[in-house]
Length: 220
Ligand code: CA
Image (tube, rainbow, N blue to C red):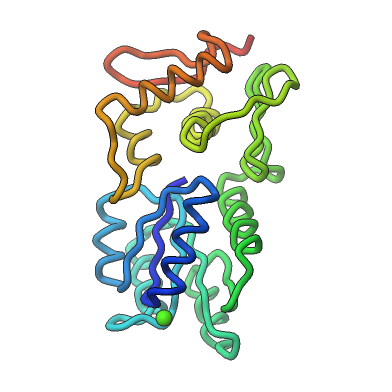
């Protein structure tokens, strides 16, 4: 998924970005609140990881403004160990969860999955469509109960389609969800990933709606 990281500490920020990218996410990294605001206005993010101690506008002020503007993007705040009052205030202002620094990367990854799952309204994270099943938590995909190995981008496309099984998703939407600022997008990148998905799952699993985008195929 595409995440926005707001963190002014270079070391923490680059470690987080690396780890999140390694977990298959696309990450845009901003060091202050005003750049984060501009980023949110320009791209669809599925989650914001927000440090509270930022230069210029404070993370809590940023969060309050975000919710005041009715932006419901899931937010996980990160705070120092002794900053209990900030955590309480952050949750009250509309943060979905928090982490105390220094945090374990596996814990962050699990909390991201939990927040996104809660927001999507699924108690269990597993998505199913006909003979296809997908688990966002473990990054596993099954076709008729046989595990299929997908690349991170292939997985992200399939997950996007399976989250809204009857919707047609445009190529631009998929690109926005798949690629961060600093990633080069080939002109036919999405087509290539869809081609590979069809090769692995069967041609009929993903239908091209000409001039509009893609949707999942029928249930069998
Ligand atoms: Ca900081």
